[in-house]
Amino acid sequence: MAREKNSEEFVRLKRALQKFQSERLAETYQDLMTDPQYEKIGHFFFEKLYGPEDFSFRDTSIKKLHKLLKGKVYSGIISAVSKVIELHELSDLLDDRMVEQMMARGIGEDLDMEQYQAVYRSLDNYDQRIYQIDLGAEVTQVFYKLSKKWVVAISLNTVRTAAHLIGMGKIIDFIYEGYEGFRAIKDIDYFFVTVDTREHAWHEEIWSKDSGSSGSSMTSTQ
Image (cartoon, rainbow, N blue to C red; front, side):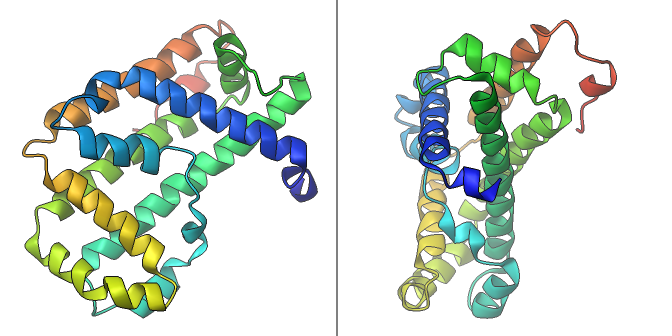
């Protein structure tokens, strides 16, 4: 399987899948993305957090992160990074499984919505998808709370230059962008509820089209 994941076909299909998902998010949240209040956080959330970004920094172990940054940055920052890494590892795993199904079904780079939803359902992982949505919501809350702590800004500004020198710059820059985006928002409730509601509705809409879903699969992990 590792060899298959490195194949040109697999990589092409994965990029096509991620582009499809990114465009779906842009369409679903066009109102938030064009709202001046949420413009910054919209870019961070939909393009950086959920988009097909290169998150190779997730391979940096949390243990190494703790060792390098312990005592130098606010501890909540490290916890936030661990949540982001968990979300991306899960999303990456689900994308890989989607691509495997696309290959098995002979679906190409020009997949349409009907094909996408059929592949999505075929993984039979209702609970895992719910967890992915809930984890994204948790990341949103964690970053918002961090943005309201003055000590976070001091910590990030203190270590940014040093972080780049020790190969941790990408992580710090990512957190700083999120910090600035969330800091600009006075009240996160509307943004949070809108995204959470629409993502759960999107998931349920796809799943409802599968009349063969078993009762056990419909059990939420919330």
